[in-house]
Length: 509
Image 1 (cartoon, rainbow, N blue to C red):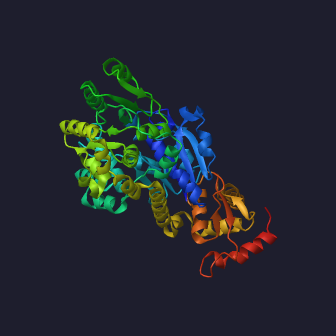
Image 2: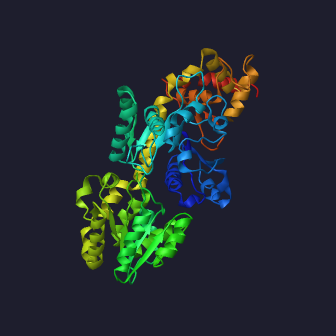
Image 3: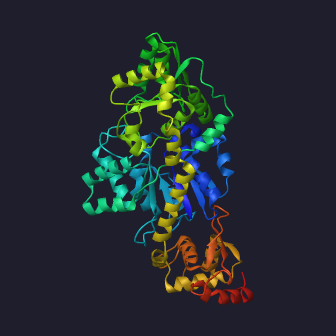
C-alpha cells in the first residue's frame, strides 16, 4: 500500500505542530512494522532548511515531498499544493499511490478530483483523519454555511476517521443539516472511530532520564498554544494570576510549542510572575509538567488533543489535571467522564478546585491515581496507529480490487502488459515496463489517451492478478515478477507463469 499524507501545517516550527507530531508518529510505526508500505509525506518548502528532513528521510519506505506551503489554518483546510495533480494523478502522476490521508476535510472532493482519471467511475480513497470535526457552536471559530457544506460533503465522499464517539456524533449532526438521508447514511457507514493516540512509553522513557521530583514550591503549569478564542488562554492566565495574587507561595510556568506574538508583551506587562517558555521541545514540556503540581485547562472546544491525553497520563506522575466539564472532555474520558473529580462546570468551580488541590494535594493525587493506566489502555498509539493502518489497507484492497482496475485494462491492454512483462528483467520499475509496452505497441503514447492504460492501472492489475509484487524499496515503483513457486493453481498468474518464463528465455530487452 502506497499512501500520500497531507497534513495542515500552519506554522514553521514543525516539531511543535500538533498535526505533524501525530502523522509522523503514525508514519514511523507503519514503515517500520509493514514492509508492504510506502508513505509520501507532503510538507511546506519553507520548512525544508530545519534539518528535520533527515530524521524522516532516514526511515525506511518514506519520502518527504517539500511541495506545500505554510498558511493560515483555515486556508489550509481547502488548499492543495500546486503540483499535486502532476504528482499523484492516476493518469499522469509521477507516483502511484493507493490512497490519500489528510486532515484537510473541506478538500476531500478537490483532492479526489485531482487524483481521478477521467475515464474511471471513482477516484482513490481519501481518508479524512481530523482532530476537530465541523459542528456549529462546537468548534474554535465561526462556522459558515459554505464551510459546513464543504466539510460534510467530504464526510460522505471520503472515509472519515473520527477520534472519539463524540466527534462522530457532532459530525453526523452537522451532516444531517446539509446532506440527504442517503448521503448521511453513507458517511456513517464509511466512517470509523479510531483515536490518534499518544505515546506513553516515550513519555516514560523521557521522564526516566529527567528530574521528575516535584518542585519545592507548589507549581501551576500550562502547556499549549496561547490562543484566545476557544483555547481561552487569556482566561487561564487570569485564573492563575488571581490564584497567585491571593498571597499564595506558588510558581506558574507556561510552555508553548511555537513562537508567541502580542500575548508575550501582555503577560510581561500584566502577569510578570508567570514564566513563559516558547518553542518548547516536547521532552522539556513533559519534564516540566511532571515536576508541576497542577495543570489548568480552559479550552472551550477541542477535538482529540494529544497534549491533553499526555496530561491525562501525567496524572500518573502526580500532576493534577483540572479541565472543563464539556463535550470534548466527555469524548476524551468516554464512560469514565463522571468518575473524574476535577471537571468544572464554570470558572468559579475551577477556582474552588484549584484551591482545594493546593490545600489537599496528596488527597487530590489519590483521587486520580487510576487515570494514568486507564488512558494508556484507551489511547496507546502503538495500538491506534496499527488500527489506522489496518483500516487503510482494508479499504484500499477492497475499493481498488479487480473490478475497479479492469476499467482501464481491456483485453488488448492485458495482453500487451503480459507481453512486455515477459521481456523485462525479473525486477523492473513501472517506468521500465511502461516504456516497454509503449515500444511494443503501435498505438500507445507517453501521455495516456482513450483506450490506453496507465502506469497506475498496470501496477494495481499486476498486483491484483498475482503477476508481480510491489517491492516497496523506492519512491518510484519497482516490482518483481511472481515465480511459479509463489502462485497458487487457482490464480491468474498460475496460468501464465510458464509463458512468462519462456518469453524471458527467448525475448530481448
